[in-house]
Every structure is written in structure tokens, then in C-alpha cells.
Image (cartoon, rainbow, N blue to C red; front, top):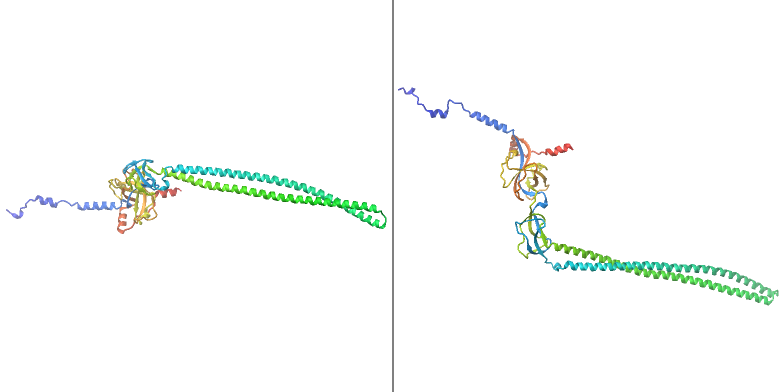
Length: 442
């Protein structure tokens, strides 16, 4: 047999090497490369990742310390840790330890002091009113007395005027009698008249002189009466001035006592109010609905300082938000109203950071505020509220639950995002479309 023309059939050899078949590897390679190239032009949502935790926007919805408003001693507990309470429910009762407030009838005794002081003030008000009436009576009496003296002075002035007129007439008679006497005396010396006629003229002259002296005495007496009346008027004014001054002093003293008493009344009323309010502070109640946690004091009889924490109440009605912390370099990219996606601890999620619409198990939020000062951890605090247009947040969330935040930024091609990350460039800064649209409308 010719061995050269003999061929052994090897099927495995033909099957493995498939020399007669055309290779398709290059087609797969071209197809994959084409898909990758096309994928580079797909849209990619830039984002900022940050860690955060559940909080609330409203201060009254955050965990609240329940403190003792006054120093005291714990007398009784009405709740235990973990209990749910409603607003106004009694949490604990404390008793007094300060000696100034140990009297159980402190409010009643202080009220008695207040009532006594009110009576004293009423007495002084009556005394002041009496003094005012007395002053009015003295003023009226003074006015009447002064008027009487003025009337008397008027009468004396009229009398003085009449007496002065009479004195003038008497003076004229005196001068006439004197002149006649002197002529008669001269004529008698010449022998023209008799001595009897001279004596008659002398008598008439002396009578006129006597009348003049009498008239002068009357005028002088009337002037003296006027002077006495004027002095009496001054004395009356001085006397009534002293009486009115004394009555006014009594009235002012009463007013001073009234003012002092009213000040003490206000102080006692303040004490009564303070004691009454303090009595209401012995019962510590829940300020709102919530759960009692972290009791700081235990047992009965422990001493409390004013303002010392007794326990903590966690509100049951809470509108949750997330506080996340971003790097200073990312803060310029955060704007109010910006959308954020969250993955909460304990709630499984599948996240595609570049395609948030294809992620599963995430929840939406909107930035409502960010702080303009850096926190102690070197990051800036951003508050994000629930996005009401997205799926609602889980009801099982609790304050302090961790959250992974993804702040959504600008949509860019995949190739641009790869190029940005390779070169270490920050995400693009952009402004939200909604504020821009609103500004255009304005």
C-alpha cells in the first residue's frame, strides 16, 4: 500500500481548527467598540455624593430636653423610659428644698400681707382726701377773712376821706378865726374896738383851734385803724398760709405713703403670682406628644438644680429632613431647590449615580437651606426636605438614621464625565432652570 497517498480521517482536528470556516471575532470586536463609542455619547448626570442623617426642619420637632424649672427633690415618677406620652401628661413630681418656700400656706400668708397693705393704702388715700378738703376749706376761709378785712379797709378809707375833708373845713375856720382875732387885737390896741369884742374873737379862735385838734385826732385815729387792719390782714394771710402749708404737708406725706404702699403692693402681688406659678412647677408635664428616653435621674429623693435635665422626649409627629455635609469645594454647586436622591440605611437600593431615573430604592429630596459657616467637621451643612412630587419617604424613618445623599447636577455626555475625572476637574457649575424661568417671567 502506498503510504504517501493514504490519509487518516481526523474529525476532531477539523472541528477544533475549523480551517474551512471564516472567523467572526473581528465582527464582535467592531460591534463592542461601536457600542462603547455610542455609550460615550449617552447622557450622564453629574452629582455630588455626601453622607447625612435624618433630622427635622422645625426645632420643636427635634428631641427635647425636659428640665426642672426650679431646684427641688424628685418626689414621684409617673413614666418610665420608652413610654409614649401626650402633651400635658405628668412625667414627674418634685418637692421644695429652699427654706424660703417651705411654708405650705405661703401663698395665703402673702395674700394676707397684700390685703393688709391694700387697707393701709386705702387709709392713706382717705387721709390725703381729707387733707385736700381741709386745704380747700382753709383757702375759702382765708378768702372770706381777707375779703372782710378789705371791706373794713374800704370803710376806713372812706371814713378817713370824710375826716380829712372835715379837717380841711376846720382848718379853714381856724385860719379865719385866727385872722379875725389878730385883726381885733390890733384894732383894740388902736382903740377901735372894745376889749369885750376882742375876747369874743379870742373865744371863737380857741374854739376853732379845739375843733382842729379834734379833727386831727380823728384823722390820726382812722389812719391808725387802717394800719392795724392792714397788719391784721397780713397776720391772717400768714396764719392761713401756715395752716394750708401744714395741711399740704400732711397731704403730701399721705401721698408719699400711698406711693410707697402701692410699690409694696406691686411687690407683694408679684410675690403672690410668683409663688402661685412656682406651686404649678412642682408637676413636670410633657410639652408635646412623644416618647420618653434617656432619663437622667433615677429613684426618689434625688436633688435637682434649676435647668437640670431630667429626661428627653422624642416627638412622635415629625416632618423629616436630611442634614448632609458637603466639602467646601462642592458648596458653590449647591442651590436652594436642587434635587437630591437618598439611600436610607436599612432600605435596600440599587443605585446608578449617573442615571438616577434608572436607580431603584432611592428617595427624592430638595435642598431648602445651607449654612454659610463651616461646621466643626470641616464641611458645610445642607438641609434637604422631602420632595413631595416624588415617592414618599418611608414611615419607619427615625431621627438620626443614616442617609447616603446624591446631589444631582448637570447632564453631560459620558465621554465628558470621563475626561473631567481623568483631569481632576470639578463638576460643572450651573443654575437651576426653575429660578431662571421665574426670573424671566418677572
